[in-house]
Length: 503
Image: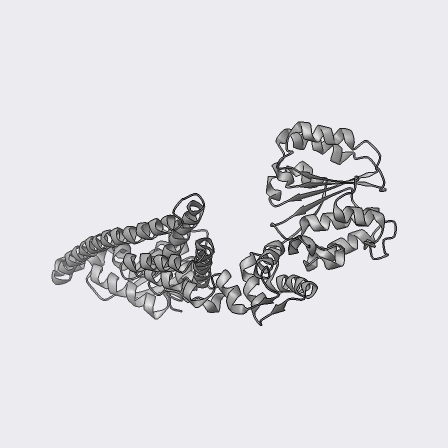
């Protein structure tokens, strides 16, 4: 009986079978050449073929009948032993469980011995980033001056944790997450080998759920084919939580409206359907991710499947992602699987209600303050002596009331306020408020009718007479009266890219 899972049974056995195009091309060039480095570093996400590629390199180095293309024959005794993992000259070390200096010292002692059968000994150290600092120091000497019969292939999912001295001694090949097309190509090889019968769309449904991992995609296909050679699309969608009854849009809609009861009932319905909550929550987080990317103008392969709830802001989506990502972690260690999800829903809805009340009160107080200041300026308009005084002060008058202008603009448009903070009042001349701006981009925005009218309206109310706005481009070396803050710049950019600030 065949007990091997698909990802083991259909593991690539030669370079041309590697599914990542760029990795395949890089290794083909290296193995064809006569100058093969004594140490490789394969880095990249899980399930992208790092260990498989390392074994292929080991076979190519040792195969006595390898082809001119650098491919192993896969028929000789040496190739067969490496494929089955029985070769004494292929040493695979899991750094997660052999991470100490004593383990590396033991390796250094054994590496001096000649190969048992193969021309070369090949050491594959998986998850090499797990080694201790002392172990790295011990390994470094061996990497610098290895015996002529030894090659090293280091594999890691976190290359940033490796010392630079180690990386500099290796030829690094970077593995990336696979595309959906590459995943489907890999799964097609399994389908043909197993003679499976698939409904149209099955592989397209599996690929997005594999997170760029060939291994994960093949495990999903393995699970689907465990009971039958025929795989239906509806069965696949049910396993992956993609059927209409399990789509997360209903929960997202309830959360966007802060309807706690409706959201909790939706979770209860999902549980009663017998759905896998881990899969459901993963799909929910993916939907949030797509929404966030769409908000900043980025389209993904699944963008057309998810719409942006009109009542959610970017800040809301970021908070939801953080809250429900934490729930996903807690779900793995609780006796009631849906409890972390329910707590996250209650926390979200409760926090939004309190924030809403506070923001309404704060906004009302701010608007009252602005109205009081504008009312005090109106008295200037009705008093000729005061009006004459205002005209006499000129530029100093507008500088003194610059903060009033910013506060008056703020409730009307935050982006216009941010643009004003990055400008400098030059003068008040014959009813024209002349501002100096330092970037053409800022000038173009303030010159738009919408922005200009906002500034003119508030300035007229504060100064007690009709004011027109005029912007001039100044020198970048000069500093504005009040420098724009980072969050203001971010807000302006965000609103421009989302189309909220008119051109």
